[in-house]
Length: 401
Image (cartoon, rainbow, N blue to C red; front, side, top):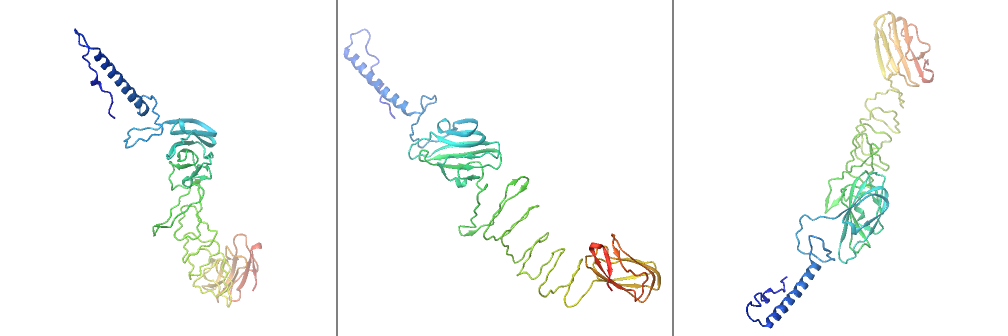
């Protein structure tokens, strides 16, 4: 603004020395000096009420608007509340950035937020968490934008790890209601609650969802719940995917095995099953080659795994555990030979042994692993064969024919 002080209205050369001077000149100078003092008083008072000073005479802007300003090196007043717990009062007047270290789970109370209309009033609050068991409860007036706060249920915020967390709390109605923002943790980090994913954005399908869950007690745990899931679930390491509902798949590929009941109406062939403990077929089974370690019952005929043995004089042979019939041929009429019954027979397994035309004058029918064989032949010829059945509780081979 332009100053109203007019120093030119004062005659600095009056009175003139060495002559008589009119008293009117004195009166004019005094009048102009008074007028300039009045202008100076008004202008100084106006400045005191309005200007920002380097040395704080007041600097209370009283809610007035500063427009078209370029700020450099501005600062916010820090207020350190130290370590506290229980009921904690956050006073707006003591600083626009406040910090506190929680000594326990705590409940916040907000006071002295300005009630000026049409203003957004904010305060940053830094909270140092020394134990993930501590919780922070915000006042009931904090009821806006809380859906974006990680770990928040109702008014209570939980933390998954010790650390420093910064929140911004603001109000547009003088503290009747507050909006709360988390300035530290990424919005993509979701703790507790539920996680919603929009699969279609602006008419375009998304590329998929990647979910990483936290390490809890040395194990990576977490659940993905979906009404309908289309895509890939990849479980890395020792973790596994567990489904309580139905899994519908045209092709189900398991690298390490499938346990439980497997129903594949659209897959005609089931392959790479490894060891099949039991197989029940209610209809017809059209199969290729089957190698069976235990017992196999078949309707409409019996086909047994066959072992052929050729022995010379003094020769010996261990009979296989996965066969049901053995043919023994001697290369000539010999004096001695030895056979040993299967080492790992199944309960109820039968094995039939038949001999060719040549004879063995002395035949040893041995066993392993504490087994017993009854009615074992001591010589072998075409009439000496027979069938034995194994009973596991007694580790005994019984001759049945």
